[in-house]
Length: 351
Image 1 (cartoon, rainbow, N blue to C red):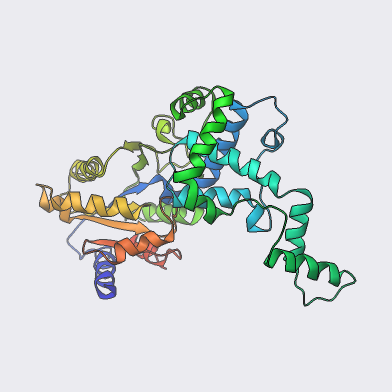
Image 2 (image 1 turned 180 degrees about the horizontal axis):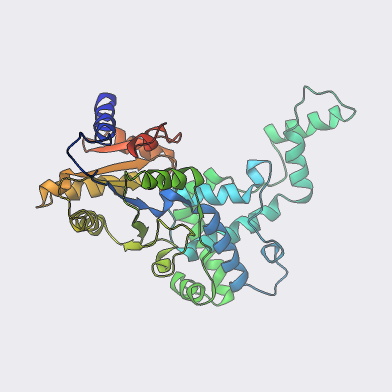
């Protein structure tokens, strides 16, 4: 598998070298990328979910109405932002209403860890090797936490992931019955009317590499973005403004077959049948499905010129374990690591 991957990268980079004399131009490679590849979306999703929660339940003495961002904490047990990101990624939650329900539960769970229970857990994490005047108290709290700690604590991210679909989501939905929102759909429609989606922040290292490659004439300057139809950013289709000239158009995709057709049509519109198209995917599962759809395409010549890469730095749709899907498959889907070394080589740039 490693040898095949090296050959793929080597072949692409060799194709990016200056053509021999007698050819007056270089065929630019086309690039199509998922939104989550070039932008960090989890922060904006958390921010949007928070404002959605504040919109649905305003004017109440609730903790979410007194913060501007999802709270962080030095300990993972109390870090709501990290727990939100991990749960949303691992469970592939795409509905804004479900994110709002999850965030409300995290705030209510955080109440459990306040005051004395939180102090006890924080004390338990202090190293018992450091002798202080409160060493006896620290040792007491540590033993309580490690065995039969009486005080409750918030649910961990792992516990939420394990129980969300079967237990917790239903309990959260039941709690919303008292607020006049009997279904996910009613919450979703309310959010779409009143909440403005926060545009995601661009990944500087990724976008700067694409910009440099476009300036060198290696790739085209018009990079279509792919937005999942079941995601939060669906209705940014016509109003997407990432502040970057390369990403002027976006396509909302509902299925792997539609995405495969988009790649084929984009390649055909280039007018250069022998040129290559590079698709950078944020989801290993989606990348494999697109590769399967391209294999069955009637336009085999164009399909052979489409190269698919799963970008491991994006964990939005399933986490780091998703890369194993690509590494163990027989399809031509390569995995690009977090250091962006191979990503830059593919774009004709020095590592």
